[in-house]
Image (cartoon, rainbow, N blue to C red):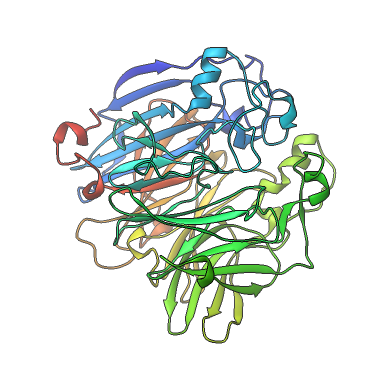
Length: 500
């Protein structure tokens, strides 16, 4: 393995840090590296062509009082594949907040679990304002460039998918909604080249929806009026429609009136799902009511006759019982999919009758589902999700859900080994939905190392085809994407394909 150190970030974290989400599997990295000639156990498929990109929260400074794992700065990891070879890079995203705190040498913004009034900087980003835009949530590809996002609305940062160099913010030719930003999960349609997104805030109309075309022009941007401030996190789309949501877990109005941001679940308020023509107007929005829940992530949606079929992870207990334990154990129950009771679920929205039918698709508890992105917005059968150990925001295995039969094929990483969101990479020339590979990064606490694992998507339980050793044990992570080489700018240049 040939390793080059690219840079080191200034960190003021204590050497004896004992925070559960800054130690162990969540120990952050502060060194940026590039590596080629990676050590491989097994064989990298020659028809795996592209880059696995993973974003994660990676703190460099202590919190003012209470650190939440969503507060860490964005760091993107790239594992690229071409002609049976692989390269690796990791880089911090040079957000305005990261750069400012590097210059100051300490935190300038309060985190999710802290009073924003304590922030040394009283300007900032986010749906509630006065937060650091860490851009540490998702990563998607649009127009050959990687875009990173923030979980409570912010700027989208542009990165090279191969070198991970920060290329500045998305501007959409001067039309980017910088007053509100973009929420955590913008959606890319490979067939049209369009990027769909929403944002939300504490001011009426409380939500907007937009579409960016393949030339980075903001071609649609409309109001989506809501009854009050809400906390949507994700969206879905079909060939002709976008699906947004108004869920009954949101900031308590009485707390908001005092400048506090405490969320509360309202079981007497139904879930509302909005169906909007992709390039529609506010007047075109159709609302559907469903059983009250909170959905952090949707897997996909598609059209079937008069119906929109929507799939995602229904939370049985959006506010789990607090129980006992430490402050952090009580806080982080909201990150434990076992306590939340997340199960793959289907909603059928009838555009003719206005009615919604819904059903649970499996009894397996899982979250963070991904599909073959060629099927995004179209009828799909398979999704690939993460399973979690009780009491932790960690991924201990993956499961392949079959929405047609209801079956679930599982693979466990093993005791003390934790993965990240698993992306599906279609094989070059593939025709079947699960003809390709699953790619993920694991953090092995037993051997103090990280590997990139490659699975055959149509035989998950057989285990990985290849294990690629990474130059450092990386922090446990969340969202990822597969960037096909055919969609990456400059990928045909062999030096680019090797991460140079």
